[in-house]
Length: 182
Image (cartoon, rainbow, N blue to C red):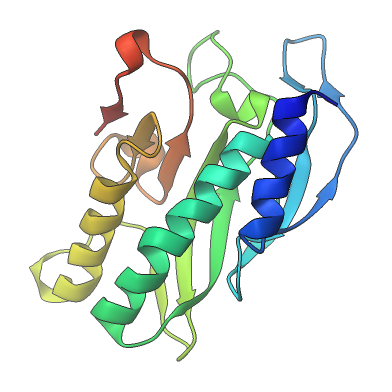
């Protein structure tokens, strides 16, 4: 295993991430995750459901985002910490919707957050909320804004119909080191 993968796994352990090693994932279509990890916790007491198979860099970025942003923001906005994140997609060997280019999911390089479950039983689904649901709407806007920069691509409700029910977070390198957040 390359040194950067070993170092990444050490970071995951320091962050309290629960994960297992998985065998290389590849396909004739071009999907590839050389050293995947199967994540069941993003650190501390924050689970992820179902298990998310990712590349290590994406798992680390997600764990840092949860620790630095999601945990304090849920506590501040709702008075209760997040205990679980429901994801809609991690590794999936597929192309982008209606395209021939491979999705970042095909490289374990993307994770879609669909809902946040709080300790008090509150569930915050990722979707468009109107003015009558200010805490949820503002929380999701904050999540999207603070994910931008930590991740290279951030898409969610309002971007397009494909992202109406989740926050898509990925680490696809962009030209000139930029980000795409919509």
